[in-house]
Image (tube, rainbow, N blue to C red; front, side, top):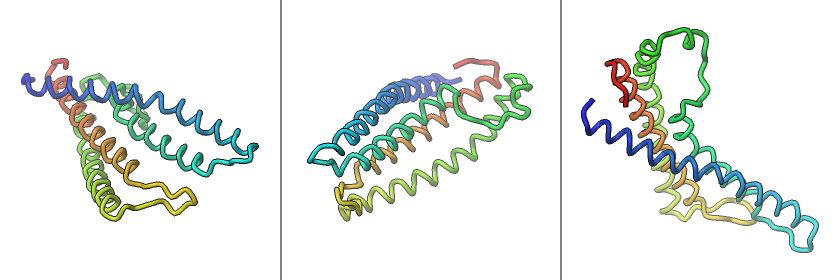
Length: 168
């Protein structure tokens, strides 16, 4: 494989590894928010922001963790025949099927960017009592979809290298 492709795969893997490791700790942030929500219900000052903030953190957690789980090959797949195939046959199937994923992620990225631009232009806010701006979580979602798209391309390059008998 050309050096540029190897460098691309290494850079995308490094970025998604760091983002994924950061995202893992968002689970603790969400737990702290939910604990505060529970505690604040018995005080004279209940918090109106906790449930929605926990939802935003959860979205960031699983969206930013997606590329990392794809990188680690810990994603869920229908494994009726896959486990019986040789690594090279798996690489052929993965290299072919990744195009469906790339198409899906491309459409998803387009929609995410359009939604984020709309949210920024019109200062979109949630329709709850807290009324937070929606743009920050939409930006996180757009970045996460982009990272997933880049990781999918890196996996394609890795599969092509495996088909050729190389390793990246």
